[in-house]
Image (cartoon, rainbow, N blue to C red; front, top):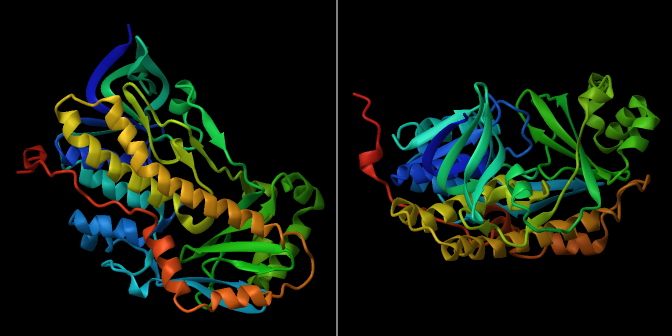
Length: 412
């Protein structure tokens, strides 16, 4: 007979949405169980940008000073290089926040930090190597999840199950949610290449000779992303590693002999970009948030921050009803109503950016920024507007869920 546990809220997935939601609910005195299929958080994430909106939440929680002691880099503005035209797209120095910058921090550090603080509450239960493999359903209502653990399969009953298990969500597939797919005309090839302290750095990437290369500063190395037309990876592989190295040198000549660090295709990973969202994020006893509800493109690095914003909104709306065992479909609908508009706006902007990239991807000649681009990027106030869109997002959330001091773990 399978082991069956009980909890108030079961969170499937230990990413930014899942761990933040687990932390906030536990902080509010809700008994919450967060399930993560891996044994740790140390994986090669692509979402490592902590935006001012998320940093402001850390301030509201009283965690900011401690959080900023973790190793990180700070981007006070973001820009790029289009051929011979260097530009600044957003300047965060005027934002009405305590941190006027984007933080670059490995996502495993962010997740470890939140989970360590979650463990300070008796109501927080993070279970690693617990993979959700299905839902428990009775009379049309989701009653919990089935999980695979190192000790075998088990079941966890919950008043509410929240799917936070990413763009390949088992929860949303099992629940048969309807997905609206917007498609994306591009993909990303991810790889590592060593970094020198004096390397030029354009946070939005370098665009030249029909190539677009993103370089994320990880101190000792760059996490690099080459934007390609969707479906072109096989053709690129067929051309061979030397041709791939040459394409990198065309767009970023300063890399020099470092491109020879790429020895074979095992070092290059394809990220198939998706832009989609659920038509309805909830069912009786079930809610999806983060990438499980809306898969975002990596454009703008907004995915982690939207996921965190979803978690804050969900905790604001559901914490007290969960304590009272009074969560209804209407309350779950309120979470979607609160968060769907920001998702629609950002996904629309991402789709337009991807479509615009097709105008230069694959063109082998030297890139020259058109006068329209130069004129737009020099408009007065544009950098401040873009800083708000990128740094704060649409409809930023604030902490309204309560702190239940009785849930704080006694460490004496």
